[in-house]
Amino acid sequence: MLIDDITIRVRAGKGGDGAVAFNKNLMSLGPTGADGGNGGDIYFEGVSDLNALNQFRNQKEVVTDDGKDGKGQYSDGHDGDDLILKIPVGTVIHNLDKKGINEIVKIGERVLIAHGGHGGRGNFKFRSSTNTSPRQSTPGKLGESFTVRLELKLIADVGLIGLPNAGKSSLLNELTSANSKVANYPFTTLEPNLGVYYDLILADIPGIIEGASSGKGLGIKFLRHVERTKILFHLISEESETLVKDYKVIKKELSKYSKELAKKPEYLFLSKSDMVSPTELKKKMTVLRKISKNIIAISIHDTDSLEKVKKILNKIAGDK
Image (cartoon, rainbow, N blue to C red; front, side, top):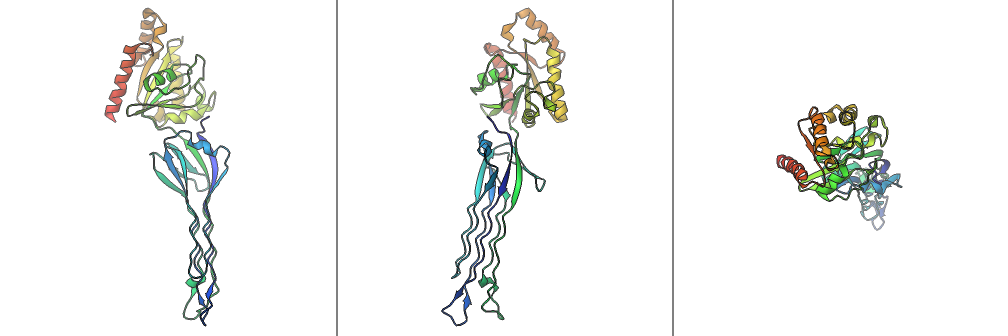
């Protein structure tokens, strides 16, 4: 199961303590206590794996190494190792303690989320003309510790939307070989699926229903995945007896969630066109043309209609 929203605690390493030590071979007891090492930092780094947040399923806190204590003979403690946590591209990082927000939008992009504590100073650093044998040192500082919420918002060029069982997964599979689960019942797709068409990323957004923006059905969680798509492919099944209502339901839920979603450029498709007679298909197309001039009847079993979809995708790719 895809985890796309999870809260964890991150704690960077503590700095090592400074040492109190002396060179006892000298009459003056010269100080040789060294500094402690710095605690390890914690980073998030973007990867293409959508399931990368699953690593935190049973992990409530992530901790990195402490710095080592300083030693005598000017031997500084080693720094703690940094920890680099891989998270999916498109993840928004909410720092719930500091109310800050970061986001990962590129593969390999790295964000420092928690600084390790500075190492303490050894007594060598406290020597002076008036105190040649100081017994003073400082402890290492604690590393930063925060509660963070990781919220995945898919980054895709084209988002496939529509009511459950509108044929989104079938179209994605046909265009990209994404192997999204397909069956003739609502909510076959229980999590977003991605496919790649040449340079374009296509996202199959699970079926949105009336009330989704208020948490009904599969809920509001999938609407956020539409936010970062550039263009929408809106599918309506020819099996529906309420074509216009189906269209308006989706647009209403998008608008309730975000006014910007409802304004995104879209293409409208009447799917499963092979399952209706030419006469009936013409009637349904006439109804939908009152909504959009960009309506196209498609079927995954009709090569010509799929070529029309590919032509649109090629244009989108060319405009990138």
